[in-house]
Length: 513
Image (cartoon, rainbow, N blue to C red; front, top):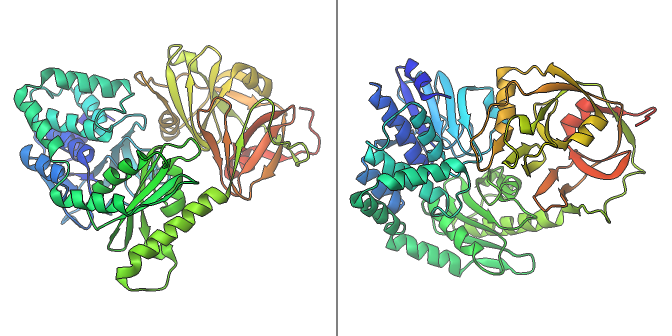
């Protein structure tokens, strides 16, 4: 996306997610500032049941004169509705309408909403959406340094979304931090310090203390659950961050009751549990590996109507039971050279000759670059070598492979692999550099045809996590997916999603491997 393409629209609404945090407000303010500088009259809005209440955010909006509005509906449908730090259709995004929809976000791409978008810029390896806005503004040669209110807003958005700059890893996050810090004068630093010292009001401090003092900690399974009094949902993140610092807690949930259900904040530092996985399991939520959230509706509780005063306790019992189910109703497979599941007695399936794509990583990134590949079964990080390849599957999903396995199992052609612009965007969304600028994949995707090869596969009846030997994460299989092992190498075990399996494999009458 280029910000200048937005200038073709006369009526534009920029929308943050409900209960916006500093990053969302700063990101929206960045786009608003660009459009205003180009003689447009955009609106910056957010939905949800309550206006911003958290003390540091109230002070941020007031001090930087950010024209953000709390709305439940729009009087007129704009030509363009642009969501920032979120994507249309998410549970925490008010259902507003626009003749065209677009999104700028640093969270995982929501595949189900992509078809409705006119344009998008989604970089889920960035620490903050504010950094994406900063980068897009720089490309337009917008004078960020000359707009000190915007510079402070973007910096504070990054500060808050990266745990006070402690979780910065992307090169652009570091570049924005360094550039803005170099131009701040003492007045700017005083304003930022004021925001930092306004992070909690006295009332919010009491809410945090009460929640932490009454949290339930299962020390054996190393999880904790805490209920907070009704509050700004941003406060839940502070509570869950604090719980995660306890030496007997690897996974935690903070929640508060709001009209319609419970708002959840989830944290995890366990290699066996992604916060985003747990959020999806509990409430259809999502987020990142370590931080996620969701909204548990009263309907999801499947509980008869009760006294509202008892609802918080009902939610606590529900969450406890569901977390117990989450840990109990899953199989964990850790792969190593000495121990792996024996699937040789399972049915044999052969690969269909369906064309797929391949990319030599070193043709796109310099060797040594760390890249994250967002696969259907989970994220994987790799360092680029001459031997690393990306495979583009039948659903435009991306996998990693080495040259030996690629050539062993596929006939590699030099024919370009044709993808629609939307499909190409899916592929580029799935591959991102961790510490470098992203490069364009177009022109580097070629065609390969699977050779006749077979796998032994078992349909999963339980959630299954397959951990790689190097400890970089896990593949996640849900009931209905397949646990597979190559017939020629029974130790090569992986997950194949149910729909992908149906498109690419068939029962083998005869398989020569």
